[in-house]
Image 1 (cartoon, rainbow, N blue to C red):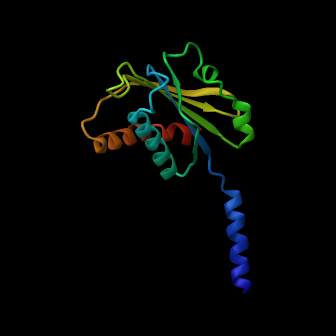
Image 2: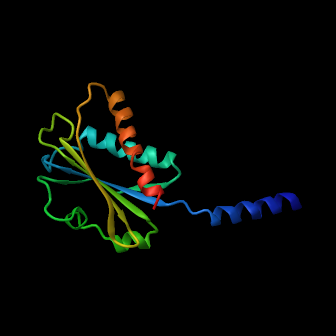
Image 3: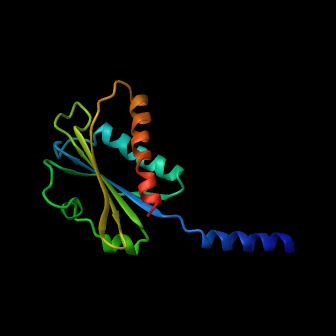
Length: 159
């Protein structure tokens, strides 16, 4: 019984001392009708973020997708009305916004922009734009999107 108690105390101590970063994902669709359903490609991106960062040891959450009929002007965080102070109070360390810009609802996004915010200092610490792609099969899309998202893990892990 003593051995079990000691192991339990040690396990709790190590669990408390190890702090996994909390990252929250926010998908923003632009160029689609406000009335249409969530685009399948956007869901695949969201799933890729959740899977890759969870597998990398992060605690992951996501916010509901947001949609603008056109690309917002200025900071995406301001355009989305995102409250970084509230995120900090909730214990979120990083926010990753993926802005998916569509021109044709039948295709995937034309461009994808990534913005990584460090919540504690309210600054963008990383930004990247890539050209979107269309995939013949969803399985190919899932594999490729995970590879793209995996490139973002070291950016956040090194900070």
